[in-house]
Image (cartoon, rainbow, N blue to C red; front, top):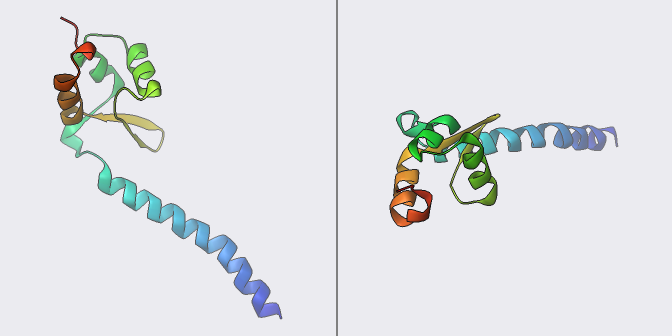
Length: 92
């Protein structure tokens, strides 16, 4: 009887930790390589706009982004591709 409680306790403690670590590993696989990463200020400069505009675009889903911990990053190559397909994002 007590083994079942121990097993259930182990499942409730260990399983969520394994899931968290698995998600972290999977997310890292999909992140852009370091040389391709941009911070919000760099993206704002790239698009000749403000950081607040970049934040608004991100929140509206207009530009792709990644989250590493608390940090928001962007892929330079993805943004270049997006800009070439969406001239509204690029100022003349």
